Length: 62
Image (cartoon, rainbow, N blue to C red; front, side):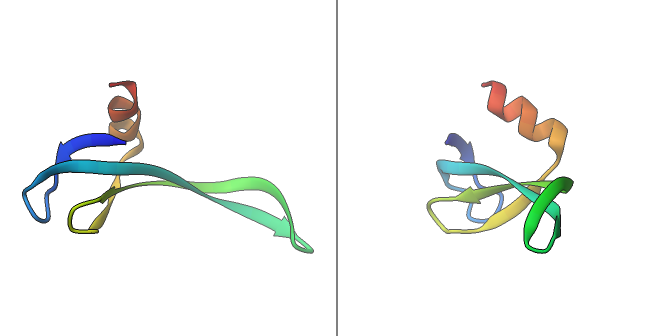
């Protein structure tokens, strides 16, 4: 959870930072990660937007 200004609604609100990992699977068994995406979602308006890996690491360090 982060407290930031939302680029969509402009309100200062809590935002959830999530990491989504896509994994290669064989017969429904996930074997290894293929891609990672970072997203931030505003708890005030519900808007979600992508975040770069560097920015996600910087935000998580605070």
